[in-house]
Every structure is written in C-alpha cells, then in structure tokens.
Image (tube, rainbow, N blue to C red):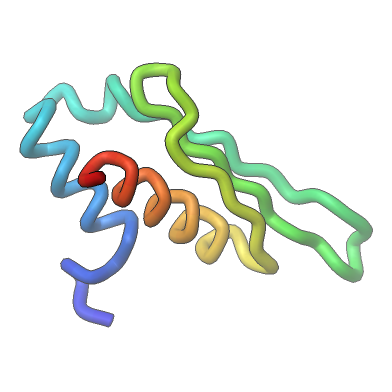
Length: 78
C-alpha cells in the first residue's frame, strides 16, 4: 500500500491541511488490548477536538488504529 493510501497517513495529511503545525494538539488516541492473552483484540478510538470520530477493534494494534483512522477520515471528508 503506497504511503498516501495508508489510512493514518491520509488522515494526518488532512489534519495538516486544516490545522497546520498545530495538528497534533487536535488529535488524541486511546488504544488498549482487551480479552484473554490467547485472543487479544486491540481497541482504538480517535478523538478530534475531544469528539469521538472513529472506533475500531482488530487482532493487531495497527489494524485497529488504521480502521479507526479510516472512519475518522471518512467523517472528516463526508
């Protein structure tokens, strides 16, 4: 997947257009594992200006963050 097609990269690029260098101040992630050690699911929630904009669960931390970032991107562009 080219870098510009990666969900978190695409979302970050949009934040840079909107907020410029202050973009990190507007974004907050909550990422945590859930479930038994042999079947951990990662949960990721992204907040933009303290509003939940994406939430996802997946078997890996990166997949959960990517899915949440995709939701936030679609909400931002929608």
